[in-house]
Image (cartoon, rainbow, N blue to C red):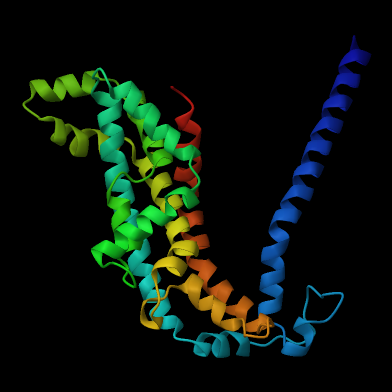
Length: 285
C-alpha cells in the first residue's frame, strides 16, 4: 500500500511539473512580442535591425520616446482616443446592462426568440455590416467625426456583453425585486439601485473589455476618419511607415509601449474583478 501511494505521489509530481512546463512555454510564446517591443524601444537605430535580434541592447537610449512622440501629433491622438474610449465604454456598460436586465427579469412570448436573435448576431462577421453602416453614417453626416466610434455603443452594447450581464442578473434572486416592489420601488429603481451595485464584477469586466477594444481599435477609425485632427493612436502609429514600406521601428515600438501602458495598468488594477466576473458567469445558465 505504501509503495502504491509513493508511486501515485511521484506520478502527480511528474504531471504537475509537465503542466507547469507547458504553461511556461506557452506564456513565453505569448509574452515574447511584448518583450521584443520593450527591447526595441530602447535600441539605437543601428541595433534595431541587427540579425539575429538581441533582447538586451548594447546601448540604451530614451531618444526613441521623445523623437517618436514628436514625430506626429500624438498628444491630440491620445486625447481623441481617450474621448472615444471613455464615452464608448460608458455607453457599452449602460446600454448592455439595461438590455440584459430586460432579458433577465421580464418574460414575454417573444423574449426567448429575441434573445436568440441577439446571440445570433455574434456569428456575423463585422465585414457583413460594414457597407450598410458606412452608408448610414454618410447619410447622417457623421463621417470624419468621432460619432461613429462612440454613439453605436449606446445602442445595445454588444451581444456578448448582454449575454454576460444577463447571466449575472439571473444569479440574483428575484425575491429582491419582489421586496423592492413591496417597498414602492419601480422597475427602473430596482435596476440601478439594487441590481447594478450587485453585479459590480460583471460591469467592471465589461468595462475592461470595452476599454481594451476601443483603445486599440484600428479598423473603425481607419474607415470613418480622414482628418489628422480626428485621428486616434492606432491610426497615428501608421505614420512611422513610410511610402517605401520601411519604418522607424525603434520609434514605433517606443510610442507603442507608451500607448499600451494605460491599458496594462487598468487591467492589473481590475484583474481581480475581471477573473471574478468571467468565473461567476458560468455558475448559472
